[in-house]
Image 1 (cartoon, rainbow, N blue to C red):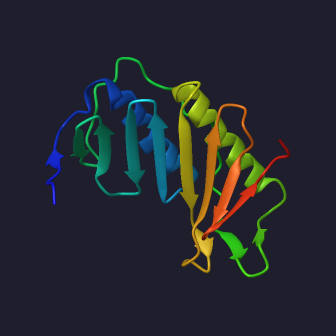
Image 2 (cartoon, helix red, strand yellow; image 1 turned 180 degrees about the vertical axis):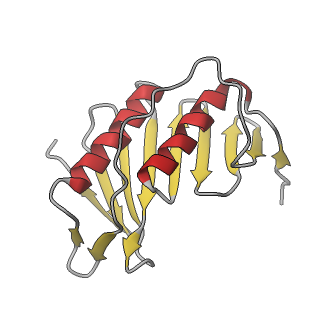
Amino acid sequence: MNEIDLVASAGPLDNVVDALREFIHRSGALRVVAVTPDSMVDCPRLAPIEVTTPGSTVALPHAIELDVDDPIEVPAVVQPPPFEVDPDAREVRSPIGVLQAMGDSVRAMANNIGPTVVVMATFPTLPSEHALSITARGAEPLVLAMGEELFSLEQP
């Protein structure tokens, strides 16, 4: 098993780390992951943030202050209550428009990082054992994952 070094900076990816961390706190997400053509930044809530580049994975303390010269705009988002999910019925219940609004904010986060970036955000649910994730890349349809099931949030 490879050990992961704890570092104080992800170098040129500090702006991505900073943006994902801010997004997770604004949105209430449990985890946000951004995949670029040559890196992956995995930001869980209140846990070390892992940054993977070719040949290297490092971790940054979640609360570390970063000196970001080129900040990435974090979309405005209102933290929703946990989504109520019923995987057997393939249902997600939330106030009208909240699921789409969260999808739009995930898409905006991906687009703000870069045109080919994929961002996946996992949100709290009731019951809590069923993960609900929204994935976005560019103008492609949003993908909703509930457990092992995948759904398109928009028509292609």
